[in-house]
Structure formats: structure tokens, C-alpha cells
Amino acid sequence: MEKKKTAYSFEVFPPKKTSPVEVIYNTLEQLKDLNPDFISVTLGAGGNNGNLAGHTIKVAAKIKEYGIEPVVHLPCVNFSKSEVSGLLEEMKSNDITKVLALRGDKPSDGSPTKNDFTYASDLVSFIKQKYPSFNVMGACYPETHLEATSPEKDIENLKRKVDSGCSGLITQLFFDNNCFYDFLNRIRQVGINIPVEAGIMPVTNKNSIEHMITLCGASFPAKFSKVLQKFGNDKDALITAGINYAVDQITDLIANGVDGIHLYTMNNPFVAQRITDAVKGLI
Ligand code: FAD
Image (cartoon, rainbow, N blue to C red; front, top):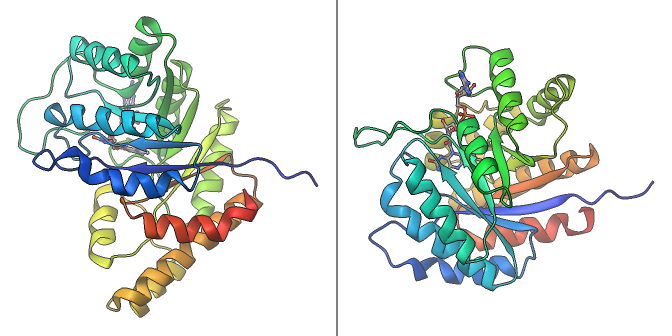
């Protein structure tokens, strides 16, 4: 049977606003050699956007210099339309034309959000109307977005976002592939037919994964809980077990014809390298 090309991409986050942007360049140097289809750069996840946009675009411009396609995350609730236009112009001048359109979260310091955008679909429509040359992706949630009133409503809202002009979707991290397959069936049934990249986060630190899961609501399958129970307090063993778990997940996803794998690298090129080596022959 002919092997289908599986897209393979990474996500990185820019340094904190008090650190020089160059601190991530060493990570990018190593990630670029792994030759991903694109590297996406977060922007202020956790709700503090304004000051960080410059860092995100600088990191994306560096990725472009390396000959790899950058994707800029653009969470909209904390920006006005004119600020978004300014960011898109800055991206254009750096030859960056691919964005992940996001709603974003309210600022963690309690400061008010701007009122120009309510949902990510508003941003998708805005970009497609004003900057049609941009390629726009969106986020999706195999286990349902935490604020959604029901899984069905969440998919209805996702359909609206996709119909506004998304070219592809990236999922929230998940540890149970069956949740992803079930989600994929449900979105295909309502006519969402664009590629969906599966977000995979290798677990290499027990505390940070527990924090992350509280934020995003991903479920722990029994197999995964056992890994954490057995290796959670042994740093080196957890790194190996976490990488192996991610490789198993990716192998199963590719065997089931997934459109793409999006690796949440946590800026750790060592882990990305080990996973990439393990799955290279499959993608
Ligand atoms: P939306 O698509 O707007 O959905 C948000 C909620 O509103 C959902 O519950 C949805 O069902 C509901 N909804 C949507 N449209 C409507 C409507 N018309 N009427 C009623 N309800 C509606 N955040 C950052 O700040 N920076 C980042 O860099 C970042 N990167 C991310 C990358 C990925 C791959 C993912 C999955 C998330 C990322 N996030 C980031 C987090 C994201 O901003 C939050 O999860 C946010 O809560 C939702 O964003 P969204 O774009 O999915 O929102």
C-alpha cells in the first residue's frame, strides 16, 4: 500500500519578555536540522499578549531565515483590529504569511480585554477579508473546549470557524488516541474536511504535565497514569518513558492515517530529536 505523507511540525514558545529573544536561537538551530514542515511560535499563552508579540514575530522571522515555514500564533481577544493589522503587516514585511488564529485567554493580571474580537472565528473572517493572501489555521479540542456548553455545540462552533476560512486545524494535546479518532469521526460527519494535525506533548516532567492538564482538561488513560505512577519521581526514567509513550501514540496515529503530527517541543530539542529519530521512517 502507498505510504501517505504525514505532515510533521513543531511548536516553540518565545523567551519571557524580560529575556533577550536570542535565548531561543540555539533551540531553533537544533530543531531546524530535524526538517519539520513548519514550526509554530506561541504568543502569550496564559493571557499576557501585548508586550510579547514582538518576540513572537522575531522568533518566526528567524525560523524563516532557516528556510523553514513559521506559523505565528495570534490570540485575538487582547488585541484591537488595528493592532492585529499592525502585526499582520509586520509579518508580511518578514515574508511570514501563515498564522494560527486563536481566541486566546483573558489576561492573567485581570486587565480588561479589547472588544474587537470575541471568538477565533471573528479573527479568521477579519484576516481572510483584509489579508486574503494569509494562510490561516485554527485550534480544535478532541476532548471538547473547557468552556463549551456541549461537545455538539463546540463542533458547531468549530464548523463556523472553519467555514470562515481555515486551511487546517491543530489539536489540543491528548494522551488517548481513541478520543482523537472519535473526534475526527464527529467533525468529518458535519463536513469539516480540512487536514487536522494531532497535538502530541511528550511528558518529561510530572509537575508541569499536571499543571498543563488542569489548564486544558486532557484525560489520563490508565496506561498513561501507570507511566506517571511508576516513573514520576525518577527524572531520567520519566524522560525515557515519556518519549516512548509519545512515540507509541505517533506510531498508532500514523498507522491510522493521521494528516499530521504537531509536536509540543517545550523548547527541548533533545526530546524532539529522539522522537523524530524514532518515527523518521514512518512519515
Ligand atoms: P474559539 O474557537 O473562539 O473557541 C472558544 C470557545 O468559544 C469554545 O468553547 C467554543 O465552542 C466557543 N465558541 C466559539 N464560537 C462561538 C460562537 N459563535 N458562539 C458561542 N460560542 C462560541 N493561547 C494563547 O494565548 N497563545 C497561544 O499561542 C496559544 N496557542 C495555542 C495552540 C493550540 C494548538 C491550542 C489548541 C490552543 C492554544 N492557545 C493559545 C489556547 C487558546 O487560546 C485557548 O484554548 C482559548 O481558550 C480558546 O481558543 P480558540 O481559538 O480555540 O477559541
